[in-house]
Image 1 (spheres, rainbow, N blue to C red):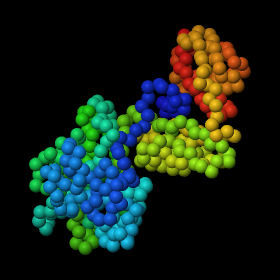
Image 2: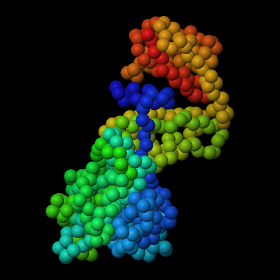
Image 3: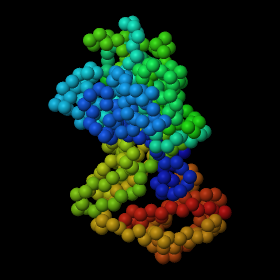
Image 4: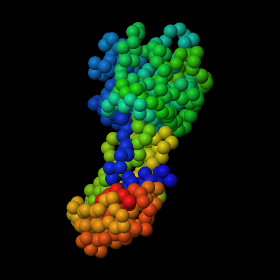
Length: 420
């Protein structure tokens, strides 16, 4: 029943104190880049991402904690479908077929992914080419707020499969630890989110997810393995070309407040003869969600997309934030005019609080629907006059949501009404 209440209130876009969805990770699917990658050490070509570098000073060049150029072996590999065999004969960054990292796979969504080496068996001696991937958040997290973190990994099916793949969030101090180079394990940090199960699935992507309470300083997310070889459980699969490490693909990273609710965005309008598509949702990129229209799944893992319906169509977003599932609806109205007039802009509802009646002024010809606090429809009527008296004497005392809908163009206005 709680989900129904959220859906009803969000439908009205009233300011009822709810926190709309926001993925705080910048460039969460590695879609945006400043250069198309062609080689293995170009992780920082993906905007807002890098290996472990001095993020406190803002330096996101491929350098270690001491701003010293290091072996490219410790940099995550950025792969994007923009790469091609002509520009990259070694196939370091090509997708879906990547000869360098021995995989043939598309991203979980979009066009980009990252490849990280997370473990090395050490039998051949010291090996300091462990990789970490750092991303930037839009702002620091709020102290005391619970956040849901998730990301996807895929196992290429060779050498070692491991557990303890995780995410560590801080303010960048992970960069300042005195280390010999950028490729050693960061066992001095405990990730807030990690997976206990050994991930062996080489058919589909596996979601790693969990929640934690922020201390208010977190502005950087670092992905990788933060455990020593003795603390990591492994399954030996068999190496290609003598590779004795664990390599995984990463995609679609999100950090979202656990009390966030679905937001499909404002209604859109088009006309029957338009050849242009319209945008529904927002443009922040990856989001752990599904989109439906007429009960049919039409898209997923994106905060928004373009549509071009022939008739007025509703689109429903289902948002899953660590098991907290909420819904919202956006309507694309196909109407004869491109820019309908919002005649509800001057609508008035009074008195409020009210005892037996309310008056709705400036909404002639519209529908008036009231919902109780449980999201149940308790009144539905047509406003027949410029100043309409509505009888609410049959309602119990409490707080209600009044939704007034202009049936000509779909504009909606909401009011919170108190029945004394």
